[in-house]
Image (cartoon, rainbow, N blue to C red; front, side):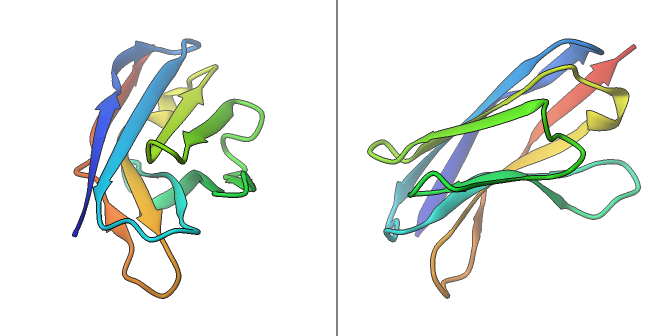
Length: 116
């Protein structure tokens, strides 16, 4: 079993920045991908950013240039910094880990609310 514990988030002003962190524990397979998804009001859960163990990254178009994902594979940690926050960034952010054909794992989610 794999557990993902998120931290960060909360209430942030538009134009500001936030940092989300996630630590994974348990039976973690190597060559995994860790990252962040979010569910914003009225939308399906969508990828924000992810990084594999070789540090290849993928970013959603909506955060490109504003987001930076990083990870420490030795500690099974992944972080996301999101700058120039917009009201449309409001939502629940989920840490995510997937490896090979195994089912993906999800954190419990952390609320991010951007205020004007």
